[in-house]
Length: 181
Image 1 (cartoon, one colour):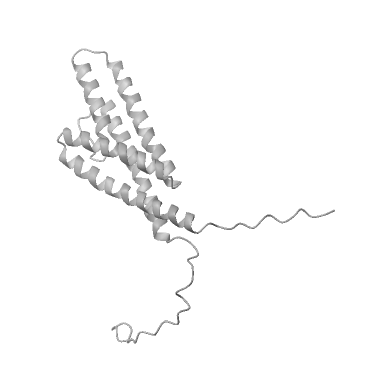
Image 2 (tube, helix red, strand yellow; image 1 turned 90 degrees about the horizontal axis):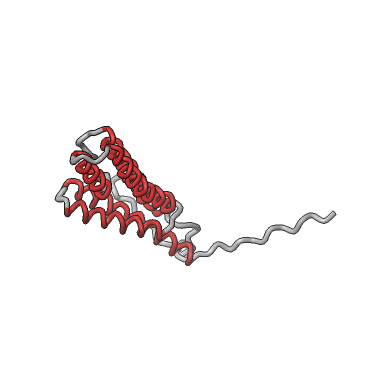
């Protein structure tokens, strides 16, 4: 009961815990890195939904989608309204899918703790955020800022994990010799 009220006396340190090397990285770092990496999947998935809405002829979009795919869809839609063949939508769909697959791949490799995948994905998403700002879609830009923050947190956790693994290399034991006959 006394420790619930904060009345329990602190015990002096024996000094034995201070020289213990950590047995592994902080599990919270792994969780943060994976959460950050999974944002690439969310961005890609909601961009797919935006593409499907475009193909169906809808006039709405998710805030989490990509601005570059929105521009491609808008340019193709304007061209079709001006008399271009409707089959031109296929060009926009292919472009959208290429961009979306880039984010899926960034998510896949970032989940494998690739710092390069994180950085490339973050850079492309930052460029997309600038495009969204130029379009003056401030709600979408705010979402880009939040998602970008989450991506950067994931990258920083990944970087800490890599630094830990380089500072604490695992010493592997050689395999046992084959049994003699």
